[in-house]
Length: 347
Image 1: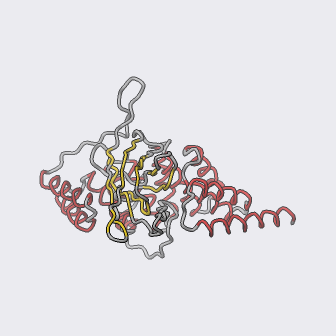
Image 2: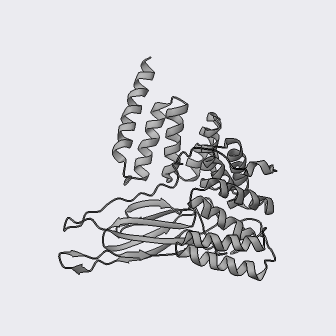
Image 3: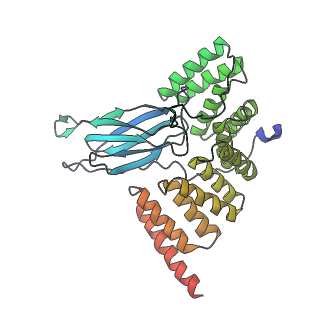
């Protein structure tokens, strides 16, 4: 697949927020009636020290009840807030990838101080492992792409990772730009800088970085996924669809890629295709990804006049994400769609 250089020109657009990557943070009330400000944050890393974006992460209590779900952002960072004190389990669920599910225990302790107590900010990073086959061999995560990287560029890249890991994105980007100035085809640097621009919602720059990345390595799943996401942000439906299709070809079991393809098809007004794709994403995720239900509901209600199906998907959405801060508004939408479904059936 080839793209003309005109695709990276400055585009004038008004940004519509993508419904993916919802951070569900429910406030928990302490016995003292004060609101807890405890949190758990961390990063998810691949074996090659690149960050893993858009991976589902959940936190459960000691009884195994899911308290909150979220996804890693463009820097591989996740976060949960509003937690009480106690012991928690954070679980990383890399659906549709060749990485193993991982979990880690975290304990939050509040120390009494005067009339209140201190908040606890816990940190837990995850370094994913490649899943093994039955024969005990590592599964492929894509075609291995080797480069001879100049020492100066590699040094700047390592500095960039350190800055990003400490949530200093601007400083990290500067080091990445320095690495790319030395070695413009630096595969890993292109992928990471694209992720950072996505984090900053600078879709024009992210688009350019991912476009360059897939020209360097056309087998890079993250490059095609990122190109689709950035193109969606720029409202370039055709490139978003084409790039997402390539990502799905590379990783047919990726829920994220299938979801991205579905919402891109909806943007391109290919509503029947979008429904088939999103239903496939729902099947792949076993109904456990809230964003799939949300986008199916949007498609059914706004584009296909299937109000009963829209209400059903929103019910499933609330079941998967019960702590959504706008649960009341979602319930109102469900009631509205149920009423429209009755009206449509009687007309």
